[in-house]
Length: 97
Picture 1 (spheres, rainbow, N blue to C red):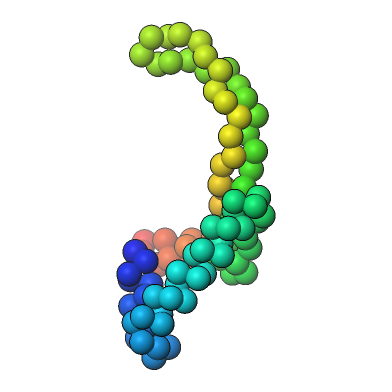
Picture 2: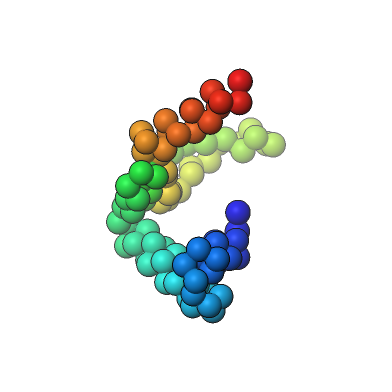
């Protein structure tokens, strides 16, 4: 699914113009991205939680040369699905069997 697909769904279900639907989707994503930049979590009930996590520096190895190196500290984005969402996915899997 792409951003354009989301715009199309909002256009069809809500009845806004495509331009208005696109503006709303852009505002939502810009707000979420800004929250991540500021280190905040984003929780969507019934879907899951996105967290920005700080990873410490660590030792690593170049797989081609075997040379040891230090991997710099960095921030990563993680996602944890809600229990409700997990149950929905599991039910879908069971229905396929």
